[in-house]
Image (cartoon, rainbow, N blue to C red; front, side, top):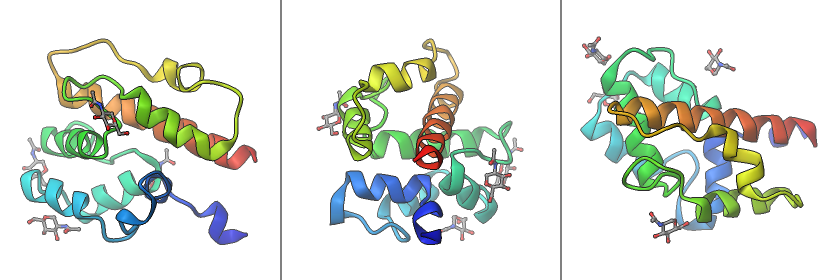
Length: 135
Ligand SMILES: *[C@@H]1O[C@H](CO)[C@@H](O)[C@H](O)[C@H]1NC(C)=O
Ligand SMILES: *[C@@H]1O[C@H](CO)[C@@H](O)[C@H](O)[C@H]1NC(C)=O
Ligand SMILES: *[C@@H]1O[C@H](CO)[C@@H](O)[C@H](O)[C@H]1NC(C)=O
Ligand SMILES: *[C@@H]1O[C@H](CO)[C@@H](O)[C@H](O)[C@H]1NC(C)=O
């Protein structure tokens, strides 16, 4: 049971992508970290709950943007990919649509795409974790 509740944001994505990606060793993390090298503490925190300790660091924010796009949660313009979010939500057997649940996470297009992506993903992660804790 503990392990179930210890499920992380990252593990949830693993459910979405089935067995094609390994939860603890996703190539996506490595690839994005190659382009946007971030400290381990940033990776760990983002993986746990979608937040990063160094929110003001552009590289770290762009790491999350990279991650969101590679996992198809975000589209190339930084908006949400609702197909993917529906897919994530289908793990919770809820009657609500992804738009109902994650609509509040939408951010207006901004000049700072990485910040927009980070705030959107942080909200999605927070929402997912609250759904997990509620059941
Ligand atoms: C991310 O990249 C940095 C810089 O290259 C490296 O020090 C760090 O170990 C990498 N983190 C992971 C988890 O691969
Ligand atoms: C997210 O996880 C990190 C690393 O475990 C932790 O330091 C941070 O307090 C957490 N933030 C929230 C909002 O839960
Ligand atoms: C952002 O974080 C990286 C990795 O820790 C660091 O090398 C870089 O100097 C930071 N950039 C700024 C503007 O603080
Ligand atoms: C949205 O994500 C799905 C996978 O969930 C992918 O097949 C599709 O190409 C993505 N669409 C866009 C516009 O990124």
